[in-house]
Figure 1: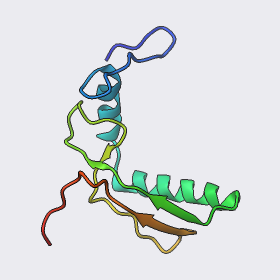
Figure 2: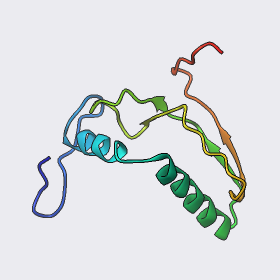
Figure 3: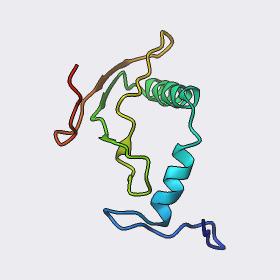
Length: 102
């Protein structure tokens, strides 16, 4: 991965892969379920500290785990459920995301 002298990473096209999406993929591949839970807890704790008590998550496009995934792609099947979360959450899914039969 090429990083500029100022710490920047070159942009990627709107659709497709490039340096920025390759860097994002590399970071996402290091996340553990505990990392994701901690991030959700931190975000909800901050939100509650400024008075926000309800969160509407519009979901994400299912990740393909390739550099073509953008910032709106993630693993739709990961969910955080913990008793120590403060607030309410609702998760939607983009209309173009296909869901498996259950």
